[in-house]
Amino acid sequence: MFATDDTIVAIATPPGRGGIGVVRIAGPAAAEIGSTLLANTTLEPRHATFAKLIDPRDGAVLDQVVATRFVAPHSYTGDDVVEISAHGSPVLLAEIVRLAMHAGARLAEPGEFTFRAYLRGRIDLTQAEAVADLVDAVTPLQARAAMDQLEGTLTGAIARIDAALFDLSAKLEASLDYPEEGFHFSSGPETSAAIASIRRDLDALAREGRAGRVIREGRTVVIVGRPNAGKSSLFNALVGAARAIVTDVPGTTRDLLVERVDIGGLAITLVDTAGLREARDAIEAEGVRRARDAQDVAALKLVVIDGSAPLTVEDRALVADTPAPRVIMISKIDAARAWAAGELGLDRPDVIEISAVTGAGLDALRRVIAARLTEREDLRDPPAITNARHLALVDDAREAVERAATGLADGATEELVLTDLGRARRALEEITGRRSTDDLLAHIFARFCLGK
Ligand SMILES: Nc1nc2c(ncn2[C@@H]2O[C@H](COP(=O)(O)OP(=O)(O)OP(=O)(O)O)[C@@H](O)[C@H]2O)c(=O)[nH]1
Ligand SMILES: [Mg+2]
Image: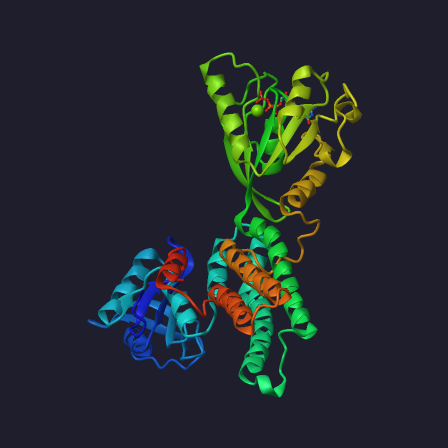
């Protein structure tokens, strides 16, 4: 995919101006290039050194910088690395990169530093993916889930299951190789118990992963309801800004409004829509059509019904016609109530009373949204597994182990059971990247930003 034995350079900080900007150089010539740019300053490993950065061609001083050298293998990538913290000027940083290239470095591809860390065995593939997730996180919970993965929570969970699979396979191999010694494990209850335990661990991972995916990927939540029900007011309250126009004229909102909000740690794409009714003109008709389309892609619908106006046939029809998953909201409870929640004939947990004016019920709503999307009441401990790629492979492993269990029960030979266990192990190795293809790696590292 990339050459891995040359020296690469890139700006590691985001584009634009900042207090400082970091240029990272990694590879066998990093120290030499660093020294050339820093007027022969000696960089002691792992010490921040104040130095002048020069243009080696004429000795002109370009900036005062702090440089740090990391000696292989004790660096982010596992090669020799020099990091130069300069003033965060885009022109200056570009110039430092150019000079480093002049001195023999190659411009790094996006993700190439992390790719090297993976290739050199500093981190496994799940940890490399966690780096991208951490950089991309938009809620603190997403950042925590990514950090846990970077610290090896998933790596450890997979390693434990793999060790159990290895142990079991070794015993079956032994019973194949030395039948005369009486190693007939495959028929024994010990083998069944070992397989059952592996299945339980894989099942637990898969179960956790459902909530994990929602944390990592976020979900779309759409607010729907009749005109004037208070949808835009709720939207603004959840966004925390007067983003949508609110008036007492029914039919105010005609387009879709989309904002990303943190709800209970989840990255929610919140959508406000036009009130559903027989449209009065072409613009409203298009708005209503878009509102219906938005419902189709929603992971959850918030159906808003005006609690301060009499309950109508249309309101009841809306409740009846909006398929799950949904939450029914009774709005404007700060005003005089025109009807009681019981009149809808629905179970309590499905009905939430709110006021966009006083904020009443909004915390309860946030909790219900997070719980409904993740099927978990509590997200303080993020699940170990959050990535769809990992989950698909866990499913492959589960299937293979299940086949092994069925085979055992049906008196299959050790060879057959071993084949299935081997398949399960291969799926786990693909998660951690012990087994990988260039295509997969290219796909994963393409997500990274430059300098990471
Ligand atoms: N008292 C009270 N009034 C509210 C509340 N929420 C909305 N309203 C009022 O209800 C009216 C309609 O509010 P919107 O948020 O524009 O309703 P909508 O559902 O977006 O309406 P359309 O965009 O026309 O479909 C406005 O006059 C709001 O001030 C609330 O919680 N309490
Ligand atoms: Mg509106």
